[in-house]
Length: 143
Image (cartoon, rainbow, N blue to C red; front, side):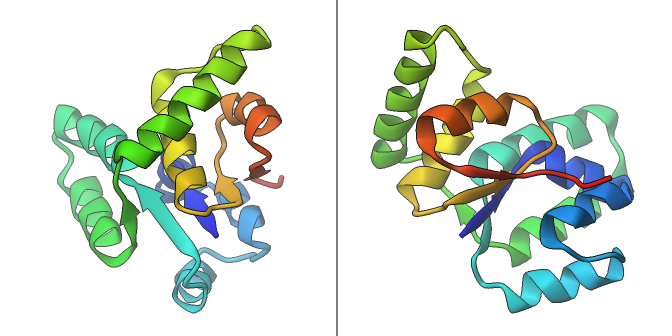
């Protein structure tokens, strides 16, 4: 299963074709087909929070419509007790190796792992550190 991170979704929305490389496709129009055919795509409630905070702050209607549609059509994993347990383990492991990471990214990783994800699509380099302690494969943009 692949969890889509905030940074990935924002870059995709901005039309950065590099984001398509995570799904090994070449055209933006193909992403809808890839997402529809792969039921193993999800995102998190933390990602919803991050994106909608920015959208509401900037008061941009086009972006809000796009993301509201996206989040209504894509499974969104919640932050629950199991996710809190896993994300606390991830943060503890990162602190142990001296690589603390933004708490929201750790929450996203905890939600992903506790829901059975094995991959995260992200353009955020902090997920490289998270990958070291979780085993999550990070799908990056390909240039």
